[in-house]
Length: 426
Image 1 (cartoon, one colour):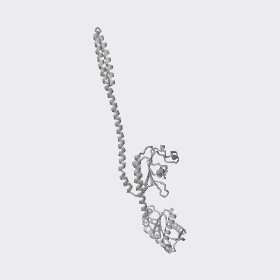
Image 2: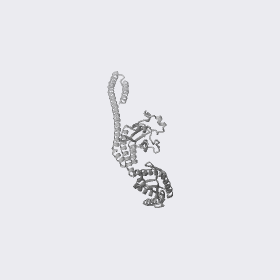
Image 3: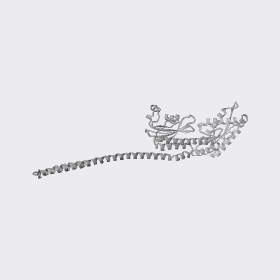
Image 4: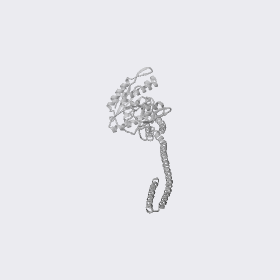
């Protein structure tokens, strides 16, 4: 607007000068016409100046209004962007918490520990970390009370997690039994960065970690970390804590279920597998032997004169003998990865996968000799126990599962008839 008025003024001045020049040339003899024309021009100029001034003020006012409207528009756009980000965050939170029902169902769908920890790692890695960085699930080893890495998820598939027992951050969570969030490891005064680097710890910038707690006891922890600083928020920490609470209950149930299952397939006294479980595994190993075209051997072991120990020393002494022989067999045969079972009373079954008849016979002889050398103290008396062993192998003797057990039993009675403390085969 101002540019237009300025151009108009210049045009008016030019026309006025032209008019005066023309009038001067035409009416040069009549100066009153020139004066009259000049007065008209001055009046027009005065009116035009007033008009331009008025329009200029209006132009300034309009420009001010336009700038004010632009500023208000920018503020509204900024507020709208902020509201959109807030709405997106609310939708993300809503989506997370709406998925809790499905998460609970998944955690309790399969009571096996493997399935529970898989679900826990997958959920945390996808819902909280958006499949970035790494996710680690640690459980406390009951034997040495140390952390043990049981599950991990990684954005970089080639990344190797060396700290299988946790690092300084995991130990901090364990020691304090509290959640931990680190926005930038380089600025966190609680940890010595130089010391961390010297320990060959996999470097990252941000971390969030929570303990898995049941009955006021830490049974493990759930952790997420990422290379960039400030990746995790307080809401991420809250949701991870909630997920850890659900996971801790599921893990406890899984461990209880595992112990129950373990008790169901193990003999109460000796800790060896039960007869029914042995029969199931024998079928599996027989099928595997057929696929691999390999061997399979079974030992039937019976303690000689066992009734005499019970009669002489009491049934408690008999239990001591059974437990001692069971422990000795487990230790002696450990390298061969056998399946040991208490068949009933004082009888035991040993399954030896991928072992032919000759090798099994030699092993049975060495086992018999080792048992005969073991001193067992009963009622303050040194006692030595012997065993009779029957051997049957597949496919040399039979390929039938039940037939193997029957032949091994028959061979064991043959050893007893021959004087006990020996190994026989059909």
